[in-house]
Length: 166
Image 1 (cartoon, rainbow, N blue to C red):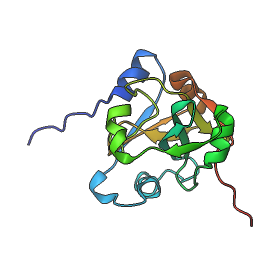
Image 2: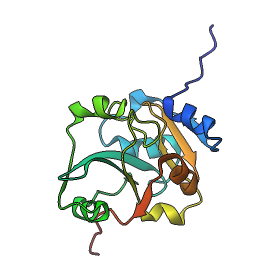
Image 3: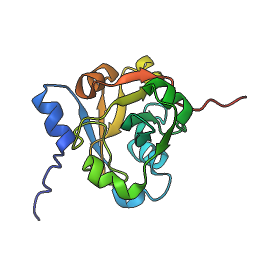
C-alpha cells in the first residue's frame, strides 16, 4: 500500500519560510458537516475557546478584512467595524472566498491568502498559550502561539465577538 503523502499548504510553506513554529493536526474532513468549527474542535480534541475560525468580511470603506474568532462565538460586526475604523461591515458571500483568499469554505486560513488583508483576532487569543487555526485545507489544523500568528499575519488583537448577557 502506498504511503500517504504529507499535506503541505500555502499557510505551512509561509510559516516555514518565516521560521515560525507550528504544529499540525490532521482530521477526517468527511465527518465535519455543518457547524464545522465546533465539530473540528471536537475531532481534534482542541477546546472550542482555543480553536479559531477564520471569517472574511467586507468593510463599507476599508474593503476586505479577516477576522479570527473562537469557534463557539459569533462575530460582532459592529465591533469589527469600529476596530477597523469603518462604519459598517458584512460577511462576504461564500462564492467570493476562493477568488479573494485562494481558500475554500472550511479551509480558510488567516495565513497565506492570495493577498494580505487587515486581520483582526479576538482578544481572547492573547490569554492563551496556543491557538488553533485552519491549515488552509479541510482536514488540517495548525496550532501556534498567538504572538506567532501576529508575526505571520500582522494581525491586531481586538474584542470582536458578541457577548451574551447571562
